[in-house]
Length: 402
Image 1 (cartoon, rainbow, N blue to C red):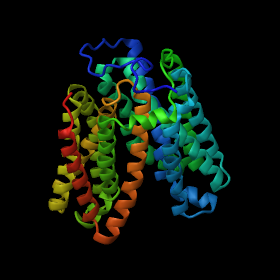
Image 2: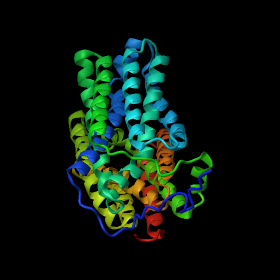
Image 3: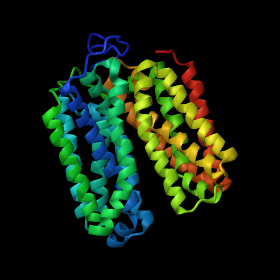
Image 4: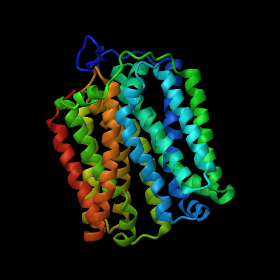
């Protein structure tokens, strides 16, 4: 069994290195191929949000049932993340990434051809495996591509694909669905995955495995206090985000009293700010990840709390939702970088724990948000967001500065 806590068996990666190698054209090309992959995978993940009605009608199911395709992707992804780095063993990581893109292509094609709900679920489950495998490897691969002292900057570019997909996928998917049908929209995401796979083939250097992990190795990593704090930060901040962000639109309708057009502009501001947050988060994380975490959580806490207090004013609501978007854009860069600082000798195993933490947080946040909004109204979920984000600030300040 490989002991991931042993420096002799798993070479140390110095995330505190002070010398950052210059990025040449090949490095940029490789990092952009990773960003293209994140865009393709997350576009496929969020696509059903714009397709539920025609999908349900075509398959003869309710919209609520059709919405479970998102649950299937997340739940399978959580299990896959835990096992991914165990199952790939000593395989070259470039080969694994290309294989995950191929799986995404096949899964999206199967989903687009599905004649019943169960085939659709199988396709979405395959996408969940591809998503989790990619994100579990992402920090370790980026660190090898750009140098460990620029991991935050590299992850900022990779997660830029997430922000762009979050903005584009539901709306563009809905337009294509109205024009050519929901199956064509699903097939489009297979095409995006083909492009990402070709970029990986052309740009990624060979990435031989330095070690392989057993499941006990992954669990052993959770004994480290810094890893525990990193996982807790993800659980607190992302549970808070997903508990509240789902109910921002109802809040804007019931409290701020906005119509559909202004709400669309507010949500667009959220999306644009999240793109900016990717860049800001990467720079802050490379300078001091503890401070970056405190700033990210603090912005989200302030945005949610002041929305609860003064969100009835349209101008204030727009500014605060935009601020929330900035914090949300920073989070996918800062949180994985923060966790990886606790496991510089085991980045791939840490990546598995990171993805599991995100998936659990999404599930808990969705459940808590739904329960709270039913019992306490539109203010409840945002109050929970503010409380959990503020708790994350305290946690960040207790961590050693880097």
